[in-house]
Length: 202
Ligand SMILES: N[C@@H](CCC(=O)N[C@@H](CS)C(=O)NCC(=O)O)C(=O)O
View 1 (cartoon, rainbow, N blue to C red):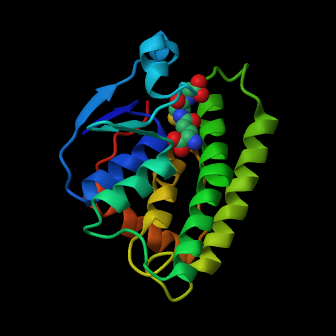
View 2: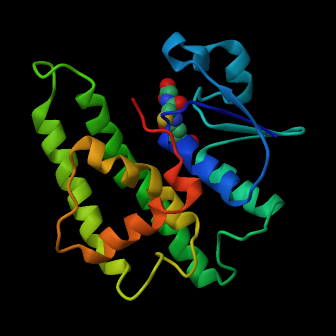
């Protein structure tokens, strides 16, 4: 099995966490996005949208982190990272969709701005993205009342938030002291080798 990825990509991190939780060996190919490798014909044959991560498993090529993780669950179900019950599974999928579109993307937007010089930085965008993350963290705090993880045991839902959560300190996004459930959950996630060992983005 081969994963085409970039070390800083939070979507690739979702897949790497799942592979680590399943203790699955794979070859990692780093796609040099700085050199536009993801736009070269060779890579576009794997993913016509020109994005990492891409997983190649024998003759199967899968892209999009959510679809890759579902594929891994289907093919390598142990240990399971998604509930059997359709009601709970729907919750996992809804939370994963929220994580990808409404949590990870604003975190990535802040990260991009932080890499710019102070004069070039769009402070309004950073403020707006911070507010979106704050709203998400408050929502998650409510979801976590009386729970260790979002839906039952550790699942694809928690994993999909993990990369952005692990970047909050670095991005200067604080988790309010009133959000005790989220704070405990972040420590719990960071304590797992699959998540705590993620490379810190530059
Ligand atoms: N929905 C995709 C998003 C993947 C994505 O945005 N990857 C970024 C790197 S983190 C990428 O390849 N960007 C290059 C581009 O869009 O041109 C997923 O979940 O895998």
